[in-house]
Amino acid sequence: MTAETKTCQNCKNNFVIEPEDFKFYEKMQVPPPTFCPDCRFQRRAMFRNERKLFWVKSAKSGKEILSLYPPESWFAIYDEKEWWSDDWDPMEYGKDYDFSRPFFEQFFKLSKTVPRYSRDVMNMVNSDYSANASDLKNCYLLFNSNFTEDSAYGNAVDGSAFCFDNSHLSKCERCYNSFWLTNCYQTNFSSQCEDSNNVWFSKNCRGCSDCFGCVNLRGKKYHIFNEPYSKEDYEKKLRSLSLHTASGVDRAKAKAHVFWFQFPNKYLQGIKNLNSSGEYVTNSKNVKHSYLIREGEDMKYAQYMQVPPHKDLMDVTVGGNGMELSYEDVVCGWGKLYKVKFCAECWPDDIDLEYSMFCSSCSDLLGCMGLRKKRYCILNKQYSKEEYEILKEKIKKHMDEMPYIDKKGRIYKYGEFFPAEISPFAYNQTIAIQHFPLKKEEAEAQGFQWHEPNRREYEITMKAEDIPESIQDIGDEILKEVIQCAECKRAYRLIKQELDFLKRERIAAPRICVDCRHEERISQRNKARFYERQCMCDYKVFNNFSKHENHPEERCPDKFETAYPPESKDIVYCEACYLKEVV
Image (cartoon, one colour):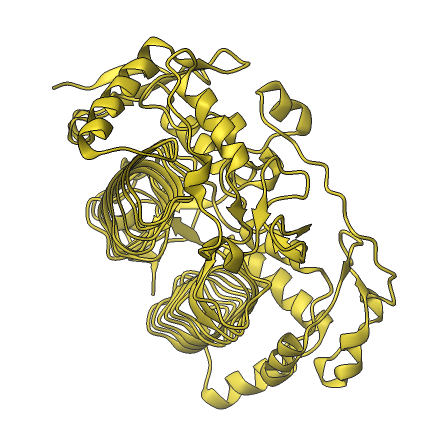
């Protein structure tokens, strides 16, 4: 079988289906896609609201609850405990399949009637203000996080404790305002570090301790801006930086980021990979064109898979922890998940599901919503095994003969993920806007929803500039204040858990709100878009420490796929050249 070039029916750009892709489609018994990889990711991403919460009333009890879905949603929203209880039956919403109407039209109608849970959580202890999470204890406003304790304000914080204002951490403790850390302790204002402790304002450091403002170091101790210090001089210099004050933090951050920018970046951020490509991929094997992956195997076009194990997957966004042999899914996994196709919010322990949402511990479902421990169901109606198999094949054939066509003329036959209009979220509420930024008019022109936020108004009692300069001068009385964010001018508060952490670590209190802090962190993150580029190593863009054998004089000829766009001013090296320049 040879590679084929197709034209995406959405963006009209060409894309290539490789021979190994065809083999996977055959194994999954699905036709090749008609959307390109980027458009497939964008479509799935529109079904993921990572961290926007709304106050709504439970349709079951009437009590006010926090929800990932806004009050104007077209379906009933239940509190998590109410949804998982036995005093309602999703099978009561079952429908016969109608061969006079397209499948997606019928599924959309079903999805409007079956209630949904509010926050997408499991095994939570004293963590009522977190969502898209599992196994949290004493956490506040953590999203897409798992197995974490005593932490707040973050996304994708896994297996960690006492961490505040972080994104994409694994097995960390006492870390603050950092991005993509692994197995770090007391690492603050840093990015892409591993196995390090007592590190400040550093990037791409591994096995380091007691470092400040450093880049690309390995196994170093007592360094400031990559220069060695004695223990005594290091500690004296660190005290002089006054990081317990807001001005001290601002000065250090500005200087460190300028310093970072002078050094080369490896084309792929990640370590211990074999035959893998993408961005933020680590400890993985045969993972291609993927993003934010930890310990993956045999995966392609996958994103946000940070809780292993997961393997033999294609086109999966937000999943893992037991996911295998699945295709075109979003927010699925957690427990054994096997042969799940075209599904959303199906977890845990699902097998052989297609075109279903919010189903748990089920097998052999097609077009179902909200089922638990069921088998051989279509549109929430029970069938025998024989009836199910016969009807399922008839429906797949019908999906090809009577496809769903959306308002923009995009055709959805069997093998396409759900159309965007079935998403319960507006485009600007989802992770899609992070990787495929659109303005309101642009999103609506493509047929996507848009939501204008209706924010609660709070009486401001303190402006950010009036917060005491030093954390040492701040007492518990500040917990009563409603502070105006220095950037967006919206209101925020400090919580006791956060204040105690900042005082213990001697870090200045933040002057901007949690949303602005989140946006500031993820602005460091490359988007999940990949470009063919050539290594920039030419002995001019960076003063290399040595000559490289593969190009002793001229520019390195190596080419690669990278998430650094061509217009980026970052220095990007191939792996061989990069490794020559880490010290």
